[in-house]
Length: 202
Image (cartoon, rainbow, N blue to C red; front, side, top):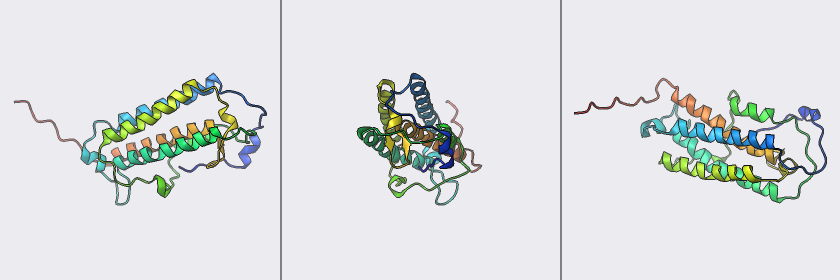
């Protein structure tokens, strides 16, 4: 996952001083996005045959199973980076233009970047149900945190992207959204395997 806020856009935001807990509006927006992408992912991968899960649109591209594996590998890394940011002392809020660029990142697949090696699918996930269960276990932790936290997520910075911790959680969900769109692109491919019709009952 790679995302940068344009430096010129930073001038649009005046950094505010002092800690402030997450607002209820921010909480509900973040919860809704995390819940949405969890639900969408489950809908997109459930009920697929092994041939469908392993289909590639071209040599060297990821299959649906590998997209899921990437999320199962990457999201724990992103969560650890969030936890590290929240353990660090709060600092002045960095200038940023708002959350809209992150939301756009989630839906704009015109710009695509290769995953960093540590987050690439290794072709080791064979069971879609197990992969989805692992994804959901971590999402449950994220959702529980967002529902209950009183922390000031805006004053803790995730160094990897230079964004605040609230934006980082939103970015985790937007990253999943991009890959859900990738799965939909795979399923829309003209060579995507179709299920054989069910045999008639005797």
